Length: 117
Length: 164
Image 1 (cartoon, rainbow over the protein chains, first blue to last red):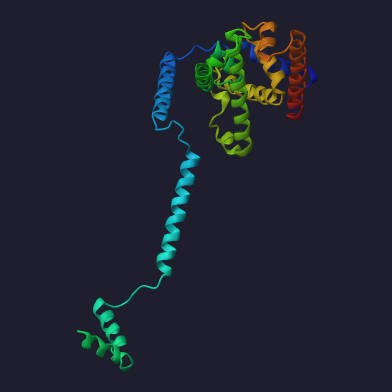
Image 2 (cartoon, chains in turn yellow, purple):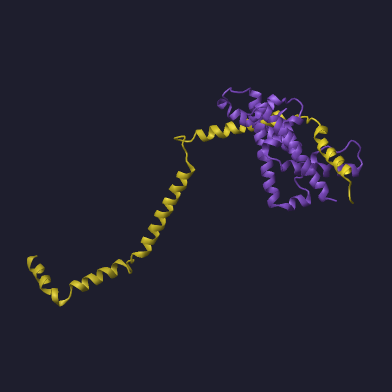
């Protein structure tokens, strides 16, 4: 459909004219109630934040503390897995000690202790 | 008046009410920052204009990234616009389409031109008040309105020419 220049101008005028025809909006009767609710909610939020100790609760600081704790925990885990763990019962350990000191090389000291007694 | 100011920008009643609420909350929050250099009402309208323009920018961004919404008709600002007085579906459709064309054309205007033009179309704003809101002079406002009209006209002409 090819419009003439006049038709196009009429369309343009009609379209711009819509702004003049826009009605005034009547505010919803709950507008004020909702607004007061939002302001009250905002106030409650504000007071609960300020009730925190030191007032300067910093989320960045909290995050850094969490990272630090994670670091320490992972370091501890690594350390614990890295050290060789003692194996066997205490009886076995005592026996190995007695074997070490009960050899012929140390028998002299054993004899000395019996003499002293 | 604040709701109507927002409505002029967003063409949607619900959005206009939401924006007006944000305006009053902002006023409540930063009342101590009001320096009494201008009238309180001018300051409030300035906040309303800023919020409305921000909202339009957000809409524009949304439109750019999700054209799907436009296809299904969700969040279409033309939805809440009163239809023509008679309930002829053809008229309703024509009115919606025309309004969408107008909004697209307005979207293409620079913010200051758009603000001056839309406020001048609303009852109750003198050029002096518009100048106060935009923090400029009356001749500058007149020039902005004039340029906005010309700009809008050429955009609409281009639209109707390309539609042929």
